Amino acid sequence: MDFEQVERALDALPGLRPGGPGLAVGVYADGKVLHTAARGVASVEFGVPIDSRTRFDIASISKQFTAACLLLLARDGRLSLSDDVREHVPELRLGVPVTLDQCLRHTGGLPEWYGLQAVTGVPFTLMDEERLMKLVAGMRRTTFEPGTRFSYSNTGYVLAAVVVRRLTGRSLADFARERLFEPLGMDDTVFRDDASVPLPRMAYGYDGAGARADTQESAVGDGGLVTGVADLAPWLGFLADGRVLGADVRGALLERTTLADGAVLRYARGICHLTVGELAGYGHAGGMHGYVGNLLHLPEPGLGVAVLTNHSGLDPVGLSLGLARALTGQDPAPRPAPASRAAAEAARPALLGHWHDPETDATLTLEPAADDHGDDHGDDHGGKISLTGATDLELALDDDGRWYAQVPAGRIWIVPEDGRLLFGHDGSIRWPHVYEPCDPPGEQPAPQGAWLNDETGVLAVIDEGTLRVGLTFQAPVVPAPAGTWRAGPFTLRLDGDGDLLLSGFGLLGLRFAAQPEGTAPVGVPPGLV
Image (cartoon, rainbow, N blue to C red; front, side, top):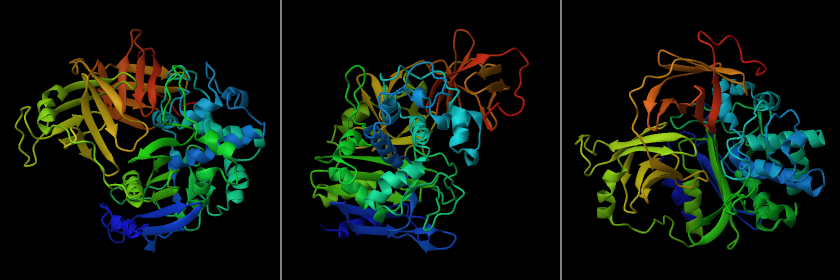
């Protein structure tokens, strides 16, 4: 196996600069490290270089470890994955049953707690398990009937960590150390459930612009695992054949999700099935406040690859997939089959206009953009496409017939299909989304008034075209397609009763009931801090 390919790939990696944050790469087989490589520094301030033992927050890669803890408890007879989560967390006010298994598979319809945090404004620095439970305990409504859809939600994994504590009397960090990490010999791996405690050899996090962006919250389960590429080898050995922890746990971890209508998904329990060129595999990516990473395993050649970074502007998914292809003798940068560029350009006018995703209530608008020389021709021929929505992008046609936006971490693309628009992101398990044509933004001004969400105790107030929600959120309200308004990352809609429905950030139709005229926010939402 030619590991010089790894070194060459890192030398050619865009986004790295001398003295800046970087990454570590591990290549594994049979539970052992075959090769490691690193670039950049763990601390820009002190110039500490990254090496194989540098520890990173691996964000959502942590989910497979949390799921393994629940699977061990199920094997112990302490719980069943078919248990209603309310049996173990009775303060939850959910109006319908959501099983532990649905928590692990993202099929419970649980509102995303990061969205609830944005709505309430409770600072991340205060967000430990106890305070987070105050936030999610008030949830009454799921965003869909549990078991019928997949919608990625970190909330289910935070609840999984709470279940571990309720059943064992120990934190997820303690339980995982005793039942996972010590048996596997992963001495440098820990759930960091107190972000204020310094950890030896922990890399500082940095955003794409190079500013400090460290993890702030201390709630774990959905994320919060800290480790280095040298310490991940035993886990890759477990993923290969179930060693130490048991083939039954491995098999359950990798069991694909089946929805109520019989549809079988790529997602399993905290880990996702994928293909790397012609090879089947499984893995999971993660990203959080200055850290992005990816972990994957290919069972047929028995190869594992991990890429962990302290630089949000890097693309660990693309890098790890490219390395896995190269190390298994495949084209290191395969592309979809070439399409007729002329046909794709001819279809361009049909893309322009307004689009709506009925599952998330998100909208976007596609218009002609300035060409490479900055000249805006104002027509539908040639050049690029401008996308405006919760995120503004510029897209260019590629030879595969898709329109791509080159972003720091991965590639976003759109492509027409049967009168709809597919909006995807290379390597992401949450995409593509399906958009349908819709009406353009209306002329109606933003609604005025106050609305109360009874699940969080938070008021939303729109006054003079500005939305204010919770402790900190504030954004101008502008008309958007499909009869909606947009305020920052959120889509707003009025229903027939005059209630305000808020979607975005993993929330779908969070209901705010209209309040009497003159209602204004006072003080801190009750019970949140």
